[in-house]
Length: 329
Ligand code: PMV
Image 1 (spheres, helix red, strand yellow):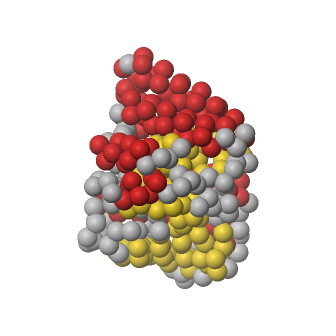
Image 2: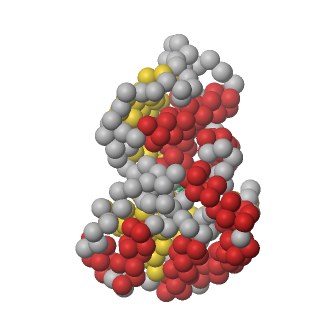
């Protein structure tokens, strides 16, 4: 039995544009997915997801995600979660070089599903780590990040960047541009997250942005502008200039909004955080619903978000300097 955990993330800058080869800067946060893996003596995979911040559910299957489990949560979220686990186990089997080993997999996650906090990447990274370790074959971090990326890429129909999976593997603040992935030094960042209780579908939102970019020149220019803004954000981080980082985050939100991936509740939380005195705020992740992240030093944004009807949950999120880690070897 091996228990591994991996952190979720917020995007400071660059989601969506990163899909087209521009840089992005995600940051790992101390909200983790925990995955316990025990090899079986047959080739079956049994997955138990105790808490995906939805009602708990248990699914038993022998591979593939076609069987419709009898559970009390939106089927597409269950299917997506199972798809990630299924592919993660395939990657682990491939890395170990034993294709017919079975596993019992138990997931417990503090990260809301599909809300822009990197739940799928965290589950994927922790699952591959725990599965390979449980067979006595731990992977180097770079290989783990690459295999987790391949999992997301497959499940999201080829519409994934390395940003989430690299960030969850390494922890801290990272800069990702295609396959150039590196950790960067950054000041302490006073993150506040507002969550509207909803979820967006990453694959669909990425496809919608692609269609807009194909049809309208302004969308291609907006994506390019996000790319430039990420470079400016990187420089502001290096100079420890929180006010400028915040300002650039707010510009980034406006550009994402122009691409059609914000929503009424995300915009309401964005404005609440700004009017509450945040250095800046933006939606994080694919959008459509889910979370915003704000930089808030004095707590005013938390108070403002708590008073916002569309905001179901508000919390401070510490930067997770550690990425994937073994909780029980
Ligand atoms: O919503 P999330 O956490 O899955 O983030 C998606 C980020 C995108 O840039 C839209 C897609 C990607 O894979 O980079």
